[in-house]
Image 1 (cartoon, rainbow, N blue to C red):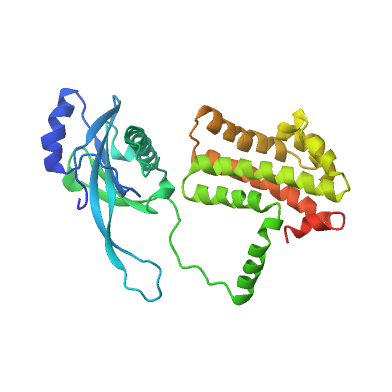
Image 2 (tube, rainbow, N blue to C red):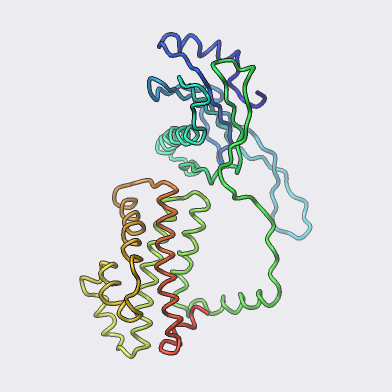
Amino acid sequence: MAGFFLDQEIYNRDFKNFFRGIKFSPKSIVQFSFQLPFQLPLPDLRGVVHDISRFKKIGITFKTVEIPTAHYYGYHNENPIPMNMYKTIVETNTFSSLSKNQLDITDLFDESLILLNDLIVSYALHSQDLDAIRITKEMLSPMIIYNTISGTNFDKATTNILMLHNKVEYKKEEYNQEKYLRICSFSKNMDKNPFTYSQELYLSSFSQFSKGLYRQATIDMQTSLESFFIILFKELSNESGMPEHEIEKSLSRKEFRYLKYFLENHFMNTLGNDYGDLIEEWNTHTYGLRNKIVHEGYYPTDIEVNRAIECGKNLKEWALDKLKAEKLTFPKCNEYFL
């Protein structure tokens, strides 16, 4: 039981009579404890129980901790300056009328996270604290501790580990001189490559997803594809001999504002139309999800975002494969992707 705030004494003092008053008898308790990547300055160790249903209640408790760390200015062989960071430890307690063998631990954690995010967003909107953001599991430690308790007998708690993700810090292999020089050369010519921005956004989508920033990951993927296909159309048209004013005239047409129509009726005529369901899947799962996020304020699940990224990736890779197959016809455009 070490490390958890709620124990037998506190339960008997603060919860037992409360539950008796609302005629609720927990058959099990599940406790989660984890550290937020920021400080949430809510009252320490003064949790509130949220009435989820007749069969389930969730209590959330906060505690701010001071963490010794060090600041480096970036000098070679410097002595760091001691500093302190402030983070918040969150403990959630799910009280259920089901026995612990009937509980799904992952579902309970997800449910607790939803409730926690409601509190975080409410605090952020009220305080205008820019550090406080909606939390996803990728923002937390790869593993967290949880307890399962039969009835309300804390002496017989079972402690386990819940795996949230596999993103673990590691030291990356150093680039050799040849790769380093290649990067230096590319950096000097980035402004001459019209696809740099779209590729940066494309990689950003994967990066944002790995950090748990689901909305931004979806928006970046869709934006990268729009930029990629419009610029690809310009480059292929230019290399085919189409005058610049004709290219701009084509892109200014009203129907070109709809990327699906543009892809199916114009762009694919250049590289082929054997795309199968790729455009439809992108339109439904990437473009459609992006629109729900931007226009309806929707917050997607990790499963939805993963599919959005995958569908966008599949469509782009199809186009690049077709472009490489036409290397002799479009040699200049192919150079941008070597």
